[in-house]
Image (cartoon, rainbow over all chains, first blue to last red; front, top):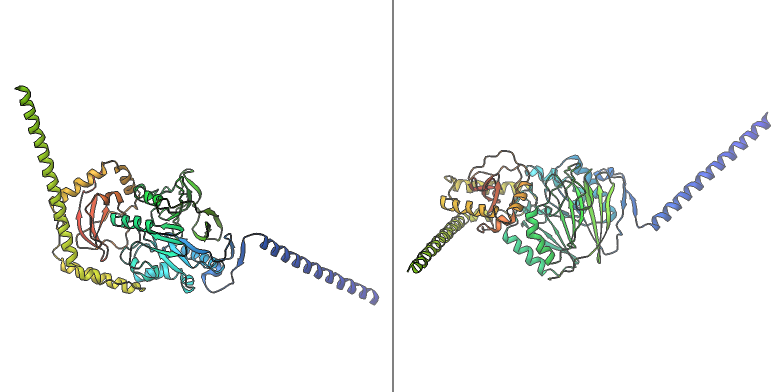
Length: 326
Length: 185
């Protein structure tokens, strides 16, 4: 009997050893495969550390951008300032992606603060949701929407509007033009024309609240605004236009060589808002989103990420406009 | 003889038509000049309040500045009433100009833009009072702005329903109102 016991014990020990070796081999192999796949693909995969801030809930980060050395990277949000849980969740995703992509500024497409504009509203609807980004030194550049306060917001320093309703700023070879589409008076139209004409930037990007094109049911495109702005954009070689107002995400490529994005769902959402196939290349009206843009040379890469971290659109756009009347 | 008489009558009619057109034009010019003078006087009277508002990273400070500027302007215009700037002559000019623009070749586009605006509840605006701070401001179609007299940077034209509002964004005040300015059809 003692002899039999010794044999059983030896067999068990052997079995445990073999099982451990197998588990070790599987772990090492999966790890190597994962590393190989990561190197092969241009996708960067990261994982957020669990922390106290909102980013802790953000989960995995899947970046489709090339993250080239020296490229310009920024984020885009529109119709964000609700102060509710959805805005916070989008802000959490933004922080998670910032840690990997290192975008250093954000353009805001209007409706930055909904409803009242009391001091508490500036905190609840902007400073608190984006605190991790602000603490990391990310700058925000706002444009005005119809729900914004045209007197207070241009003076609110964290919006970097310099006290003006419309303004421009440059980052490397790219010049951004933040316009006030609520009140496009002759003075502003003159300013837009002059500044676009005088700009020597390789990329000219305009952003403002009311979209020139969109397939949404709620508002639709602003045709009168389009009739005044589009001739200037075409004449002076604008490459990309970002707008909000319609609470969806939409990408359009029309015959005028300008790429149009509508992103009005970083806080508000109008579910199932699209009518028919329309003019959009891609649309998303199921959840809130934000966008990260990377500009490297003559290419613009973009990735649109939902509140839950899903990539809903991504791609590369060549710089197509040629500044004909520069 | 009959032929000469006909030419004479035709010339008289032509002169009459030209005289009416010239009179109308000079009437329009007088209305625009009067409007311009009233607006300039308004802005000059509140220069101090306009320059008192400074950039800040504090919402508290911005709210305080706005409240103070609004209070001072409201007190200095305590007797202000509807029609101080949009006098009957100026009102007639604006209504005519807006109707011509909205019935002109760009009219359909402008109306589409106006219709796509955020729906507002029934609000009752009063001169020298604040625009409701929690309500959105409707955007003003650019083609409409191109056909109205230019304003100093302190003031804006805004549309609320059928009413044209002369609005001062700084202190968020209604400077004057022109009801039934936007024709229904």
